[in-house]
Length: 366
Image (cartoon, rainbow, N blue to C red; front, side, top):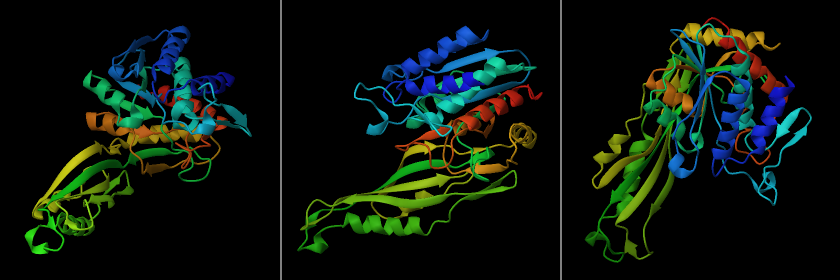
């Protein structure tokens, strides 16, 4: 399986934080050269230079399984880029270091090789999306254009959740709803308080409403998943001697499937408006048999005993789940690795994920 390691290294070496087009070109060409699949490139994010999603299909049948990843990355740390603008890629102690190793080019390489090698009974799909790090640009575009496999294994991180080094199977994750509470008042000189309406006071009254909201909770395949609501920023006022006429409060809500905090209650305060700025959907797998099949494949691919777990982070699995695809998450990254200055991935786990994906593809699900 040295080709999985080498493919990971090659993908990580191609910069993809400003534009994913070059690495998308590489993935597309590799699939055309190494598989007999039907390979397509759509127009997702092309107006921003992202280059479009890469999607490949092989096999036929009534049921489809997709191996899903993304090939964009967050901007690298200065230490992860050479003066010439190339990504630094280093192998040490069985780990590959560099931007995108964990999130998530290691899993993309594993999925590419598994897609190449698997002999499924039904339709097998490989998809690598653009723009995951900026709200699911690629996933949403693909769904709008009819991408809706029956099942999907999304290769985001699931290693190290039950025990260090164990690659688990996540059956649910939280979403994120970011919103703004805007309080408006009437400005006045601070020496004449009664002549104005203090927007900061109205905003803090709204914050008290948010503080008293119950956090959403649910259960997915026997696993508890709890959300949260937190005020994270406040901005208001123009001068020390002016009654403020405007104040904004940022709210971070971690959502769970089927439940939302009633943030609209903030609008019961006079002069207060609540607007949603971002809404990344949560994910829940409702098909226990599918979740168990992926867990069986994960168990067979390692000596440890993996478990069904839940993740705190939103992924493209949320968009797919919302569109009707049964999803689980199984991938290389460990908690705390993604987006860091010393991001790395275990090459042994990259190879393990290749085995998991291939076993799932040949498990009879499709």
